[in-house]
Image 1 (cartoon, rainbow, N blue to C red):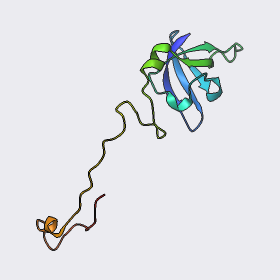
Image 2 (image 1 turned 90 degrees about the vertical axis):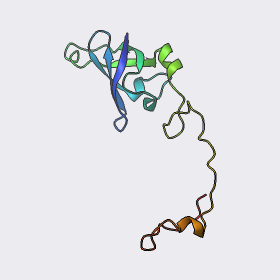
Image 3 (image 1 turned 120 degrees about the vertical axis):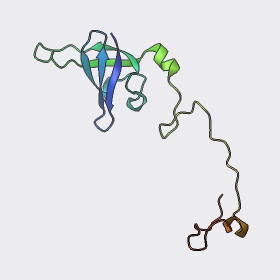
Length: 119
């Protein structure tokens, strides 16, 4: 079955999927295959298998074998260790500037900013 991630609760290690059958499915981190919980975001396309359940449990369906859809896996940007996108590459080098006394002439003497070297 196919669906999209509706929400992910990282602290609880679970989430919910909106399925093509119109139902919302609960999944636990252990139901994920070849994808980490922190890689999922609302709207991410996934495929999964509905877990077998009793009639009493049918009101709260559970998903197993949750995987990224192939198109979603190809489109997902790589992430760094802080969850940021690596799509645009590393940040450009920042030029170091030395602050000198002449830089402070434009500030009133009563309210100068802290003097320091910016590196």
